[in-house]
Length: 356
Ligand code: SAH
Image 1 (spheres, rainbow, N blue to C red):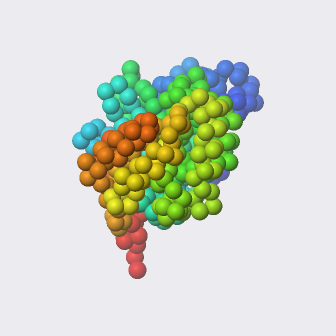
Image 2 (image 1 turned 60 degrees about the vertical axis):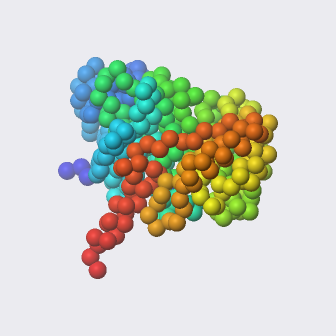
Image 3 (image 1 turned 90 degrees about the horizontal axis):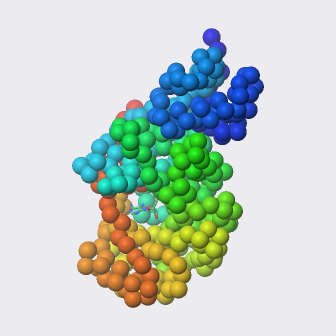
């Protein structure tokens, strides 16, 4: 018996798969064929890749796993948002979400197991960072969610990298994922339909800009000054808002894409009219957009969302400064669809179930 673990096919880029095909006496085009089945036709197994020669399919089966994770929870919300909790081969858990709007099918994917950033209101970082996800583990989330869409005419239209983890802290593995999402032989999604959300790591934002693509950048600001931001987003201590805005401005210049600033609204903490004014002054004149996120309550954390009139006032003040702002709609609230909540519950459950 051969007990060498198989490799994850999704860890290979197109050119690596081409090399593998050529080493087996096949043309490069076989790699494109295989990827078309996987990314475009929702196959579940190599045997379903009908125009790939049987011998090559056997070789694929012998050497690779197509899917690696086990779906341990699949939740469907009343608004048709679906969430998957995946268990990876090392038993680490990761979450991903499919959101449906009239025409849009947006998926939200994770890039790390846990998170090292320590934002005080976020469920994902409560137990720290376990590890980065591999390219294959990130792409598997995309494919699993894609396979929840049963209508052959319907496709994923947008991707937000806003799940568990700090995407720019795992940029090396994220870049080939973005390329596959964007590639014609991959998911074929325009860069403008893909958004990467970051806590704001200036050097990594510059590396991201070097890709020279029109990906959207969202920066999690959450406070209009360093004193407050240091409290809410502890990594800010070594960075500072000025550095982040400078890197984000460069991103806009390079990509031509308006940067989104995310701002979680925490009642009594960062939601006062003075905060809105300070934020307005900070962003005035920048081609940007503020996305206000009402706090999604997390068990064990005291933060709550503000009342609706207070949120409206915040939006109006920003508009007075010429800063467009929208309030994020809540999706899948009844299935713990916000970042890291389902994983956290399972982790806590597992801890409780342990003997002793
Ligand atoms: N690490 C990335 C992705 C985080 S998740 C980043 O910092 O941007 C996407 C957004 O949800 C971030 O702005 C994050 O700060 C925010 N968020 C995290 N926990 C939240 C909660 N409990 N309620 C509302 N927004 C939250």
